[in-house]
Every structure is written in C-alpha cells, then in structure tokens.
Length: 366
Image 1: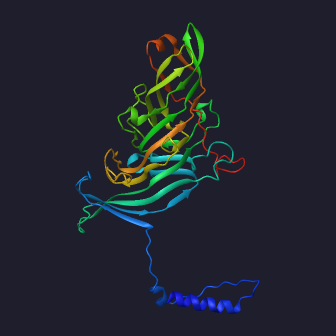
Image 2 (image 1 turned 90 degrees about the horizontal axis):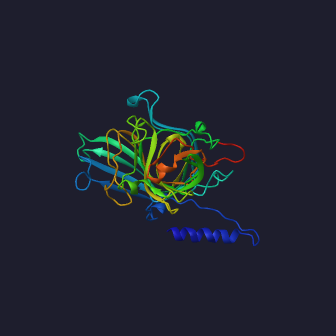
Image 3 (image 1 turned 120 degrees about the horizontal axis):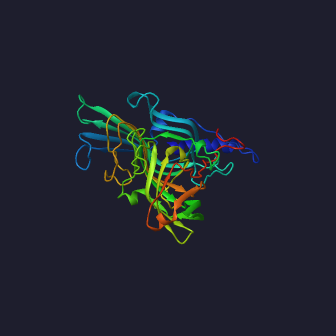
C-alpha cells in the first residue's frame, strides 16, 4: 500500500515539475497506511537482576533501562551540590563542587580549547534498586542510579589563579564516592637537599596507580570524611587524598626518594576520565540510596570488586588520570635522611593544575 501511494505521488510530481526547477512535497498517510509499516529498533535496552545468586544485596532486585547511543556533553556548572544539610549537618553536602567543567579529553587550560570539545557518554542508563521486587505489598525503592557504560572526557573543578600560591585554590569542598587515580608525568622542580648547605635538585615522580599499590582498592571518600582520609602523616586531615608509595627520582646523586602526599581536595582541578592510554573508562555512575547498595558493573555483568555505595549521594569514578603535575613550591629534605630511606612528606602543596578553559575570550568561567 505504501509503495502504491509513493508511486501515485511521484506520478503527480512528474506531471507538475518544471525541467529546471525541481519541486518536492510530502503526502499524509492515513492510520490504515501507517499500520502496514513494520520495523525493528534497538535504541532502548532493559535488564533485570533478580535477588540471590551472585547478587550480594539481600532481597534487592535491579531494573535497568539503557539507551544504545552516544551522548556528547559540554557543560559548565557553577555549583554542583547534592545531599546537603539533613543527616550530614547544616551546610555539609555529600557532593559539593564549585565551577565544574565537563569537556572533551583533549581540552586544556589553553585559551578557548574547551568550548569545541565534548565528553562522550556511551550507552547511558538509569537503574532502580527494589527490595522485595516480586511482592507487590512490600515492594520498596532502595536506590536509583544514573550512569554510562563508557565515558571519555575531562572533568575540571574550581580555580587556581597562581600555581605558586596554595591559598588561592578552590573547587572540591566535599565528595562522597570511590575513585581510582593514576598520576602520570609529575615533577618537583625546587628541592633543597640539606647537607650543611642547600643542594638544589629536581625530581621526576614515577607513574603511580593508587589501586595497583593498594591491592585493587580505590580511593574511597565518605561524606565529608569526618573520620579523616587515611593519612598516616596527618591523621586529622579531612576532605583529602592520601597517596603513599610515591617514588621520586632526584637529579642529585641519583637519589630515590620515598614520598607521601596528603592533599586537600581543593587542590585537584583537572581529572581525565580515561584509562591512562586515552581510552574510555567503564561504569561511571552517580547514585542515591537509603542504605549501602552494591551496584553491578555493567561492563562485566558482575558484582566482583564493587565498592558499596553508601547512604545518600555517591559518585563512582572507576579511573581518573592526573597528568603533568608540577610542584614549584620549595621543598626541603634532609640529604642524609634521603640516603637512609627517610620518606619525603608533602602536604597541601599546589600541584600546578589549572582547570580547562571552557569559555571563549577572556572569560574564566561562563
């Protein structure tokens, strides 16, 4: 029937068209004509994970709706705050980021590099965690999650006007979630190795993978980290990242410096959402739950190695790459101490990171 209609339509057009001026039109199809059109689409996918078996959550099932598509996103968010006040206390948030930029992986702090680039989210989804999923009378919503099977891009946060001034860094105030971090290409440019006099040196840090150093466990941030961030050097530090097992290779006498870094989150401005080789990461997600929930890894279809998302808002970032850190602040160490393996302890140094320029012209944030 549709072919018949199209044939009639083309015949009419053929009688009316001018040789040098083509004319185009559309013909309305009736409901009867449309009912004869058939096709198949796979834009949406649905999955159900029943309780039991490999599902470690007691009597909780999961309903997931995915979109078999890519989303290109370029965004500036002045304030990204979730889970504020309530059980956390007045003014305290599960997640509190200022001046957030989401751009393509190749963007940078170079002027105008960000606006033409996009982060790519492949197969985005949302998912519900339901207790007693097969019993209508007691069915209960436990949590909801949003995410993507794969993500590739750059997440920039805050401002750093002067890389030599630690006091002017702003950005991450609090964070709840899990994140593995890789440090690639970091340098310390001004080391004073004290041996009666100051011997000047620089140092290159070996590339570092937090989870690899810690048996596969990523960095975990719980609420505003009121219990500290695990720093052995500064146990009272909160809202921070603690990196132990760093190796710095100094230019002086071939010294190898065991180093530890306790860094307030406000010094973190530029995170690559990639695997270290420029490829997309899997299983990026953000969730809200009323109790601890283990969400499935979509990439593997398993719960193996999953960090439980805690009550409230939780951001799970499987991997970020922090590239080309440059510590220009003067760092003094004992030359004799370094020779006998005394660790170099660093805290809250400016990492030299600048957020992506995601505005045209002279604007710093738009």
